[in-house]
Length: 313
Ligand code: NAI
Image 1 (tube, rainbow, N blue to C red):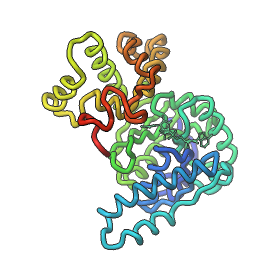
Image 2: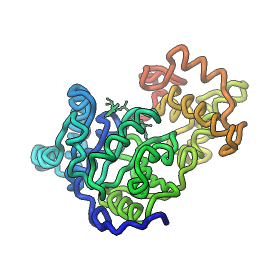
Image 3: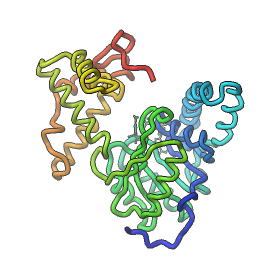
Image 4: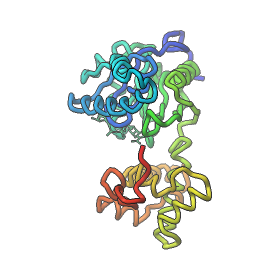
């Protein structure tokens, strides 16, 4: 391992203060789950409006969680969790005391690198940095930081919706130290999640298998082999999947899926992933162009409000 550091903070049992960057869908969920499990959270975003949006997401989700967790005292439960969350638009202040930073801002290599490069100069030496990126190289993001920090850098990939989805993929780069990895395992367990480990390869585990499968499903429909309804029913009843590929595509968003596939086409040039898996699909590109993105635009392969609407979460 690359860990030659003598620092002991941030090691097993060390993560008490978690700073989350990005108060969107994922960042809000990560902050909420951390707060529910006793971590002190700082949630940071670029505008007060974005922070308010994040707090709204958390409040809404908590009202559902509280009904199960503490039905007799929903208000008390919510208050306790919310008291663990502070917000700020000041990125330097946000990391002053952090043991762990989890970044869940927009999916842009440049923007993520700019943020981490800045935070590297502001956070404690012992602070661990993690990115929630779905499709970018964790190693390339980490390179915005100095060597010491690169040993304390990893991917921490949560799934949407964060409060409901148990899995977290911990992504180790060649530089990630054992100490960092162990601390991340421990904190994900503390957050009530189930960690798996993967090297820094395109799509990690889940998306590496799921994206080519969804793309192949679209190709079947494009060729006229079967309808989306029949493919979904086949995979639900024949393979035991909780949701067929087209419901899943509508849930994930066709724009997001298309974006991931196009990113992987570049990786295919480097031989990291096979080319045929990610070849462009005219049907998907046309749907994206015409705004049929899935649930987020009200229409994808299904009408969201229709009988076939993707499952409620
Ligand atoms: P989102 O668009 O809901 O939220 C992104 C937030 O980041 C916005 O509030 C935005 O104002 C903020 N932001 C942008 N630049 C910032 C900066 N420099 N500093 C602080 N905040 C900044 O995005 P979402 O869906 O939550 O995704 C965030 C990350 O999580 C992305 O890297 C994405 O690939 C990843 N991810 C997304 C999943 C999903 O299902 N949506 C699943 C797993 C990972």
